Length: 203
Length: 232
Image (tube, rainbow over all chains, first blue to last red; front, side):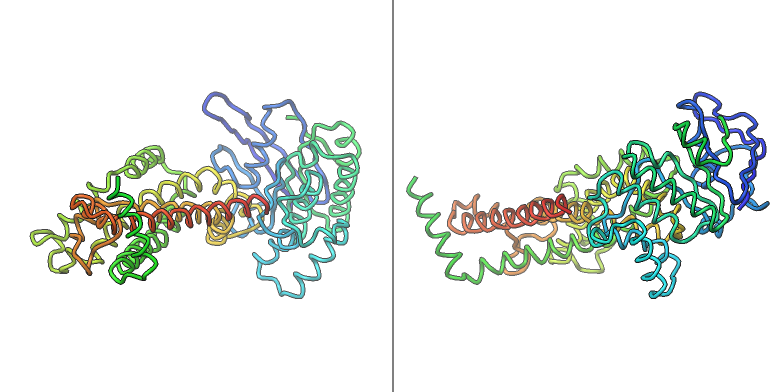
């Protein structure tokens, strides 16, 4: 999914966060968003995700303005993930259930994702009891399982161990390579921006 | 002092002998307060979840109004319901005054603001984040609302049980609309109040003890539920 921003202006109660922001995020690429704290990176992701509709300018998704069906094709992973008070398995399967996919498909895809994460033993555990790294991995798995066209990542790898970071980076890179989808991620990690992202946008 | 001890022993005798009048009063109390809390929860939880998930201009005003209504004295509720149901009131034709139904109505009015206020504040603060998560996972508005209720069900259950505690322990509203008619609208609290003024302590002690046991059971259930929830 191509996301095009045209002269987007966003203000909060006190100041202007962006002025005439125009940018294009193309399919098959991971774009890193970098910038100082308060530069508006998270705000931009929320605008693109349609969580905040209070702005001026235009955002187009494959040339179309945001409509209800488009919400079904995008996802966002937050810095502090909220995992449902259900099992790890149910959390990962949840987006597929929302889309009324056949039970066999849900089972197959969820089990495959759990195997990929290497958390078979945790599958039946309550997800919100997991450690930080495991939580983030489950949140990312839940976001990718329905193969969204647009993935928005709000610093999903901050504050977790190096092994988990490496695993998640590989997961994101594989996803983009296999499915040619669009990923926009906020990062404060220069190495990550250089090695993982195809392009970096400074805010 | 002797009359207190004698009253206490007599109370135990009434409880364990299965006194029909005493257990009839307990049964009616549980039926009235139980019905009231079920009705209030079934209406207020979905309604204020729906309202709490929406941002609108009068949010702060609504919060204040609900908070104020939450602490409304039960006698005021009793007065309002009495005025509506009395012979000259707008709902006189229903002939509900001095019936168990009138007591249920009064308790619904009494506990509804409590459940509404707590549900609204909870949903406003935590529900909206859960709703946003639902949105990012592709949930429809309806699916997000169910998701919020499902995620917050522990807290909503606790609020509902607290509402039941308030309902079963109040005396003003049920006294005014029920009339404390023997075998008909007499509940634990109105009976205790009446027997105290008559100086008949045996039955009052017995009912008081049962009310405390009910309170202990409710709190025990809540405590166990909270512990279980924290373990989850």
